[in-house]
Length: 402
Image 1 (cartoon, rainbow, N blue to C red):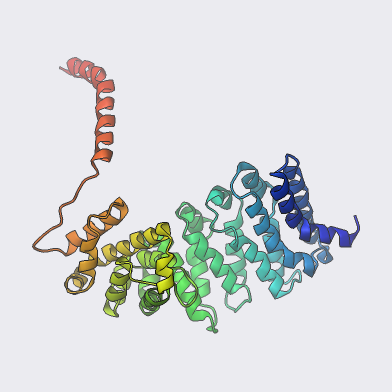
Image 2: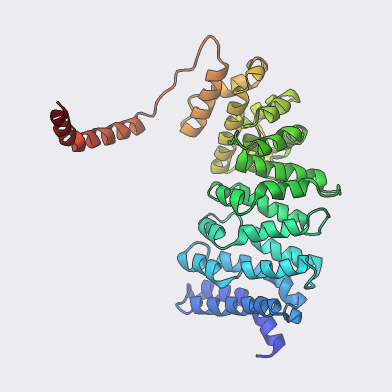
């Protein structure tokens, strides 16, 4: 196939395959066409890794992120898609080529390098790909790129940080980020970069990554010291205020993401104290009461997303209530009324977090905890069944001992 035709095929094939899928209802031969197109894409990377640097032309490189996102939108969640990600090298081989670029052994424009990493960013939150993200070697490759840029600013810093930020929000990936991704070392590299225009934002977001992955591990002293030493309180509170006014942060983070970050950060008592001391309670109370966002956003708010925000906001309140020196302040704040209003919320995730916070704060009228009886009865039934199964064995054992 002529070089130009090959480029054209790689760039436009996903669009053509989408048209086929829409018009013909995913015909049987579509999978084979997908395999062929991905084979073409990966072969470009293999040629580049063998030393033919001309095999990655600009037009192809700029189309690559759209190619990847198009592929996963076409086949979003099935075994074929997952297997192909793991086996084909669709993501790992471009990252291997980027390593050569970071080492100065290959040339690719900065914009193209960013686009390659953007392809990984586009699938970082895909829940059905968690196992593949763990097993495919993507995480150590990303960490390796960060380490190659240590001590200097790199055009890919922002997008690399964004990928780690997204991966850190996925709990099943936390072990991989700690071990294969060496997240503490990655964070220190980002924190010690030369201070540029985006340094403050990168610092905040990478500390949020640390909080997501290590927040609940008090025994990991280096992580806790990083969170305690770096002042993230003012940024966190400002983002909450942005959510109250705009429904999202000024940097574009959705309300749920802002509250998720706060929930992880406030597990650290130093961060919790810092946040509470500079006015976190008022915006937090507004968010718990649903009093946030523009009027139009409130009218068209997605109930599931609103519930996610509420759960995480109540989790922030619970974390604050665990800090003894904050309790008097919290008792006198707007937060108490907001928490009491949700103590009987129908979703147990909200009511549990709310009642936990109130039990830490109430001094005269503790909240009665309403146990989920259906769950309890299932546990009791299972325990009773196990006891019946084991009773003859224990009886025989006891008679033998006697």
